[in-house]
Image 1 (tube, rainbow, N blue to C red):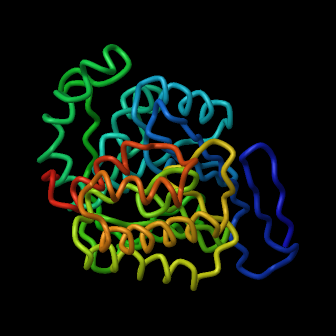
Image 2 (image 1 turned 30 degrees about the vertical axis):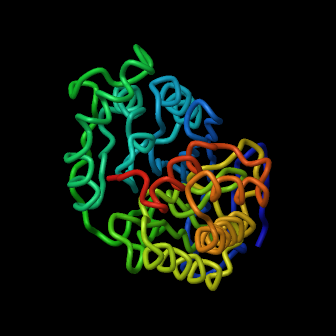
Length: 291
């Protein structure tokens, strides 16, 4: 099997003459950096079709992705939204304007969560984003419900894997690439967002799901949140797993959120997205309610 690399894009080609070979697939990710919560949407490409895994946080993020998709010359058939946080769907308006025929899909529980929170998210973020983000529901692209376990791009399978023991969490696995698109489950070069997993039991379930990903031995892992230039391999899973275990250890010793933050910063002094630690520490110590 030949693997080709080029500036964040990977193509995997089946051996010549292989029976029932999947079509050649490529992928490109779009790390947004600190202005976009370090989100990294992923484009999967076949010979003629493309599928976008998640949007980003701002309209400029969406414009960048739309231009990149246009440049491929492929037909964007589907946009799949794997999570209900606004940085997974706020950027979709310019993408759907560029590709009005593309389906926008999400699991039923994701849509339920978006519906319950979107008005508050617009109210919170619109003053900061201004014209670069949604100002009303008219600017929101609401996905259609789909609980199908797979998507396809030119016939190649994309598996949607619900996280065990965690509501509204999932990652995607692409067998022909031996690749995991980690979504909100996997972080690289940043603090891990723990506020949505407020109990030790939920964080333990998260670790168990990461162990399941490690057992897949994927050749490619694209974190949902990553610093630009971060490796796209199992090191991101190991970082997320190690961070969660460290968080649990330090939480057991910390008197309050400031002590927990200080301990985690001592262990992880150079990570991005400090807001994740700030909010996560307050939620874990009971100083802040979340969700």
